[in-house]
Length: 128
Figure 1: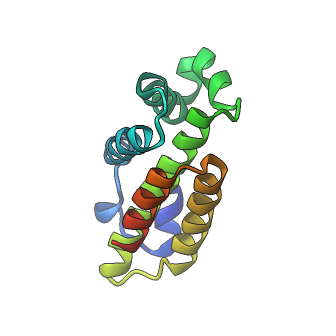
Figure 2 (figure 1 turned 60 degrees about the vertical axis):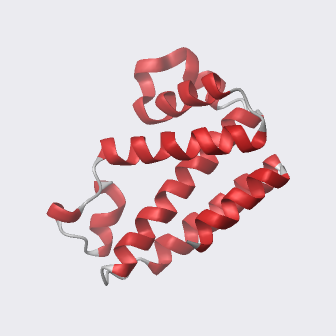
């Protein structure tokens, strides 16, 4: 995602594309929704509302509601950012600050949901 990773010196040719971020976030959302027993259809719609913004006005309101599915979308977004930060870190970019910030946000979102199977999934993604 250009807005953040370029600030850490990642050159344009290595920047994560928006499409790649959305696909990774959707994949994480499917696993997380299953682990947390959330409405998968609602979660996937909220992911798209989160990433596409204004085009999905009605869903955007649902995303801001703070229900379990909305929290799960926040978690999935942060976990996708964590995984990308880890990839850049392995490439030698100094993204530790961003990694730490996204780990903390992911942990905060996961704690709000408080589901054991989800906690295990989060742990696996954060330690991979």
